[in-house]
Amino acid sequence: MSDSLQLADLHGRLEALRPTLLRLAQLQLRNAAWAEDAVSETLLAALEGASRFAGQSQLKTWVVGILKHKVLDQLRQRQREVAYDTDDDGEVIDDLVFAPDGHFRTTPQTWQSPSDTLQQRQFFEVLEACMDALPGQIGRVFLMREWLELDTDAICQELRLSSTNVWTMLHRARMRLRECLQLNWFGNPAK
Amino acid sequence: MNYPFRRTCREVAALILAREDRALEFPERLAVRIHFLVCKACPRFEQEVQTMRAALNGWKNYRNNGDE
Image 1 (cartoon, rainbow over the protein chains, first blue to last red):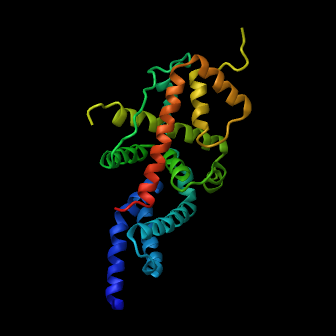
Image 2: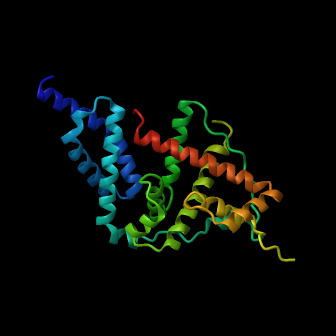
Image 3: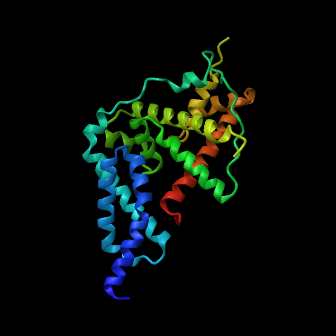
């Protein structure tokens, strides 16, 4: 293949990844402009070395790895703005789930994991929508834990939050996610 | 009577969730085990949290590495 053909091919393969990259960046950063910046920087960095990757999924793993670094750079740069974004609506999810005596208001169900691939993809869409629905700062902390795979000490450092704060946000995120999945997937038998 | 390891479902559920992000201390693990002996709801909650864990791992793999 000539150099120009190879470059065009590379562009095409990277462009094909753009929607996924934007989705992930937006889910983590909760800001469209910051997400665009992180993705642009990722694609620029990827162009330099992408020809080394033969398979699309191999390429994707590598590019998503770059994106994680760029997203973290954005979080660091925007740290002041992020820190002031205390948009927890004050609604305490535990009070919706538990009665004042500490019992579950509604007994938890037994959840069946989705079985086939198509159902699984639909399920992932619902899961993403539920993560999207988390309040901004809670969503950021949750995605830092689950997608960037930072431990809680690292999250405290990056966002300059107290550990109590981070524990509380992770607790609320997981409770909300559970409620959302119950409501939008597991509670609905007609899938 | 005051039982030293007695916890409400709300408190046990919090421990089950905390386990996603940190290791429980011995008295916490003990409290969960004792609670599970008398509670039908919390083991189900635990099962849901495990399904959620598997789902998040699956999602991460799908978004990070899966073919589009």
